[in-house]
Amino acid sequence: MIKPAPHLLDVASALLPGTPLDNAVVAPDGTIHEVLLIPGVAAVRVSRRPLDATSLPRRTEVLRRLAGADLPFQVLVPLTEVITFGERAAVAVSWVDGTGLPEGAGTPEQVAEVLETVRSVPLTDSLMEVLDNRAEGSSWSAIIAEE
Image (tube, rainbow, N blue to C red; front, side):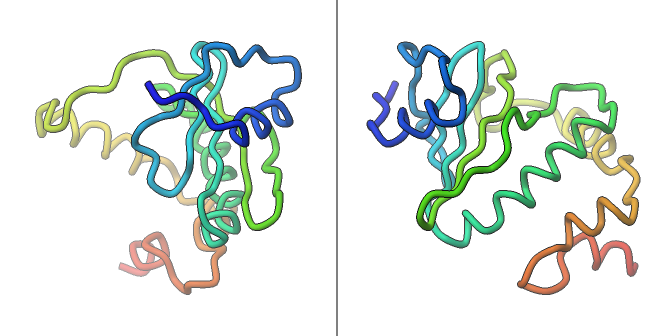
């Protein structure tokens, strides 16, 4: 595992005061976020670029809405509000126990079942507003709703 840089520990301490960080490690595969894993407690997502920072509140709200959708599997739940510092932003989300599966694991039927479950979440006006609230123009949800 990757040892956390001091700035990640500082962000985690600000988001989750008093939380022991002795076992915290960096997820090796974060692409748009640096992710500090605090096993059994939380994952702290820290944006890498300004565009990622501006979209983090919207992405966090989508997670909050999905968590309330009563899905038959665990969904990351935001534990904190998004904080910004300079051109970056961060949020702590719930810990989901388990292990990652290797690439290619799972049958097409299993993947289809998960996708169908996510597709069944009603695209209410309030959810659409969160999904489409971006400067880039219409998103996939607007395009799908029009079809």
